Amino acid sequence: MVFYLIYTSKPRVPMTPEVVEDITKASIRNNLRDDITGMLLAIEGHYLQFLEGNEKKVLALLEVIKSDVRHKDLIVWVMGFQEHRIFTEWSMGSWMLSNEELTKLSALEDISDFIKNPQNADMQSIKFLSMMNSLLKTWIAHEPERSKKLREGMSN
Image 1: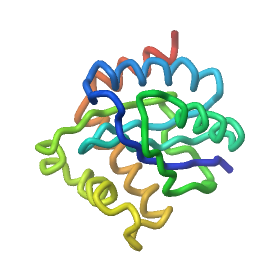
Image 2 (image 1 turned 90 degrees about the vertical axis):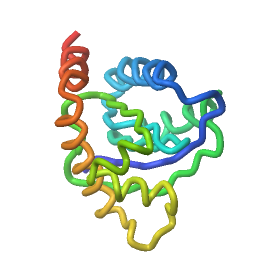
Image 3 (image 1 turned 30 degrees about the vertical axis):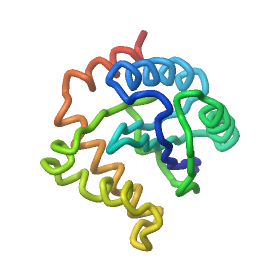
Image 4 (image 1 turned 180 degrees about the vertical axis):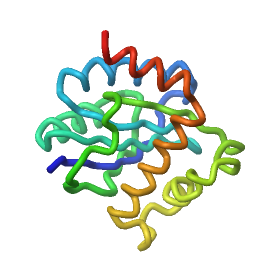
């Protein structure tokens, strides 16, 4: 069984592609060491992150994120155990999404709804895991070059 959690936070500093890239690079390095995988979305003025791995290591990482000066108002929405990892191809992927992209990619509609109303009763853990799986497939299809770079980065 693999532990997972999903949190949202708000940025303390302007959310730019460079900030998201810096977070991703540090996450790849640290997550490889701790065998943590996941995805970070920068979406509608929020971060939404899915993390999976050993429970103690993921919870320790969450404490580090809580103290990160780039995050504020961090809320953990879902946590639990699943049989398999969703993100098996890399230690951390990221995607900065505009409102225009949200309206064009059907896999993102549920993610957008979650950001707007995270306590929606329809957002049970299993549905969220399904959403993340769908998002992963869309992300890879939409950004093949980024996916290739992440896989190459894992082999270095």
